Structures are given as C-alpha cells and as structure tokens.
Length: 545
Image 1 (tube, rainbow, N blue to C red):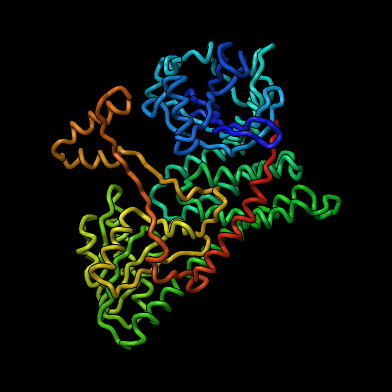
Image 2: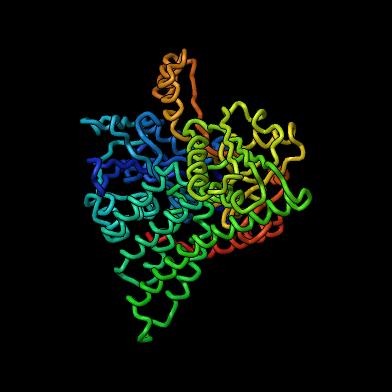
C-alpha cells in the first residue's frame, strides 16, 4: 500500500520474502536464495534482494501479497513451498528514493519434492531479476556473504534477521530455537494450557544457551525477539496464553537485567540463573493455576445446578474441547458432587477425532479415581452433524477457549458455534459456559491477529475420506491437486481444514476461571494490560542493520 507522508515522502508497505532450503532433513544450517534485481526495475537496480513487492489494497493481508509476488517472480506456489515464518515488521526512510518503507518479512521453505535432485530448477525467474544464488544466511547477516562489489537493498540483513534469528544467536541457542519452534508448529494434540507450558520450556532452553554477551543491550533485544518468535512462529492460533505468560516473564526478567552490574551479587552468571529461576517459577505455578480452575468449576456447578434442587440424579453436559483442564474438571466435579449420573454428549470432532480421544481419557480418569458404585458415567459419542441432536435437553454446553477477544468472542474448536446455536434453540435453559484461564484473553495490539484463521493441511481430511473409500474422492483429489499446481484451470476444488471458530461473547452465560467468574470488565482489563506490555517489549525492538 502506498500513501504520502506529511514531509513529502511516499509511504509504501512491501513484503520481503526469503526462500530457504535445508540441504538435508537433519541439517540445522539452511541456505537462502537471494536475487539480483534487473536494470528494468524502478528502484535498487542490480541490487541483491529477497523477493519483494507492494502490498495492494486488494490483498487480504501481507501474506497474501507475499504468495502473489513469489508466484509472479519465481513461479513458486504452495505446491512447491510452504509458508515457514513471519518476521516482525519494521519501517525506515530512504531519502535517496524519497520513500518511507514498511517491510513485512516472510520466510518460505522449499518442499523436498520441489527440490529433489534439481533444487535450482524449482525457481523460475521473471523479468524483474537477472539471476539468483544460494547463500549462507549466517554469513549474509555477518556482512560477509555477498561477493565483493555487490550492493544489497537497504536493510536486507534486518529483514533476514527478523525471520532467521538463529543467525544472531550462538549455535546451540539457534538450534534450540529452531527445534523448539518446529515442535510447537507440529503439535496438534496438546491443549492451549499444555502448549503454553511447552512454549515456556522452549524459551527457557533458548535463554539458558544465550550466555554469550549476557547482560548487554543486544542480548536483551535478542531475548525479546526470541519470545516474539515463540509466540508468532510456534502455534500462533493457540498462542494467546503463551503471549501473556511470556510478557509476565519478560517483566520480571527485565528487573534482573537492569540490576547494577557492579554489584558483586549481580554478575552475568548470577543474572542468567536468576532469570531461569523466574521461568521455572512460572512453569511450576501453571500446575497450581489449573487446580484453581477445577476448584472454581466445582463451586460453579454446585451453585448453578444443585442449590435449587438440593439433590440431583443426573447432570448432562455437552463438552467441546480437547483441553486437559476440562477433562479433569469434569471428572473431579462429578466425583465431589451429589449427582448419581453424569451424561456426556461428545461430538467426534473430525478430522483428528479429538472427541473420541477425550472420551477415552475421561473414561480412564473416572475408572481410576471414582470407586463409588452409586455413581454412573454415561458417554454418548455423536457425529459432528448431529450437534442439534446431541444438544437436546443438556444442562450445559462446556467450551474451552484458545483465545478470548473483546471484539470477536471466544475462539474454540470448529463445531463449537453450531453446537451453541443448536443448544440455544433446542435447550434454551442450558448454560453456555467457557472454562478458561484469564491468560487466554487477547489484546487489541495486533500481535496475534483475531481476524486470521488457522487453515491446516487438507491432507488430514482427504486421508480420512480415502481410508473410508468415500465415493468420488479420487475425482476430488485429482481436481484439488490440479488446482494447487496450476492457476490456469477453469475449475478448482478447495479443501478447507479450519481448526477454530469464534463464538460471540453475548452467547456465553458464564466465564469460569481460576480467578472466579470473569466479568466483561475483567476481560477488558486483561486485554489492556497485554497491549501495554506488548508495546513495551516488542514495540521497542530496534532496526539494527
């Protein structure tokens, strides 16, 4: 997008996309493709650059623009590369071309099938570039990677370091960060609470290996950038709890970092150990907070369902979450309350069938912890399309939350909104309850974009169709593959595998957390607190190169 600044500079937002390739599957050191701009382009002729282009008003978001530019300038599409990472945007002024640039860095990784034995043929240049080569990104960041006499576009290294922070860290810290991010990206089984604990351990391991230059301004900025990457390039759609936890940790770590280094008890080694202790303390506290949520839920059920009737033979709940907190809370509440039968209506939840998994887990917990023969657990598993049938005569629809937004509502697993709407129609007296910790509240700072949805691998859906030998799946598969490989076809089949959807706040009766029953005011306060801390720790990351 372009515009004019008050001082006569043209304002332009652009994407800056780096193509990475790992020579072997076990390699920690990638190569990055850089391109020589032709003398036909309007700016920075013959300069070495990533793939760049202006973000237009018609683009849904910067990532859309990045994919478009990759396709136009290199022929790369989602069939030959995967989106890998996003970097923190930054701005600078180049007086030589009278422009203020805002750069949105991205990193893409060539797929193994696209590279094969002919990795160089995966990229086909258009007129904007004269040629390209593979470079060692660490050497580029160190200012030694380009050939003598080559000129790079302004802040090329800044864009690169924002997607490849490993090049700024020592070898061990860099490996730890990369492997930690991959672990988070691939984890589609852990709930938000568990995933946050994993993310904090990744961050702790990275910090533990960052002993070089400990205490300096660059070191502290690298710590902040590592935290940013854990949030944005781990599992962003489930990253709100991680964001809030890391902001609280950074606030305490900063106090230690700012201690007078001349004090005997404040040397670099002591500071690092103190910071690691802070992270350990937060990790330990997460266990007790989960217990508080369960205790509050037991109290809530007593007050809402047992105070009037005194005794109750049966409680019927429709749970929609794979959360371990919800799983444990259901079992503990049933064990401690004067209820004879607990009936759970569970949707199977395709394509990963989390409903089946959580049913098995609840059953195992019940058999292990409840020895009272007067208590009966009844689990009924329904197809996802049977949400209205499953919601008939339930007492409660129990939701988890991967994110809570003042503007958008509650983000939970796909299928939650149909179940809530069905319950409001067929069981108007049912309570719609969200069981969540306060750390799931997302601010309005835009670090985690509430408008974005996590669209996952279509193969997860298609494999289940193929396994079931669904009629017509071969034709759909062929049309899908054809559409991915080429944009010239006059037909296409898209397979959408969206994990999360929003339930408006007005649809929720109560928010149950370890802090008690949350009001909209409390949620708003938490959102504002996150905004303030996010600006403090991530808004201050400077332009280095």
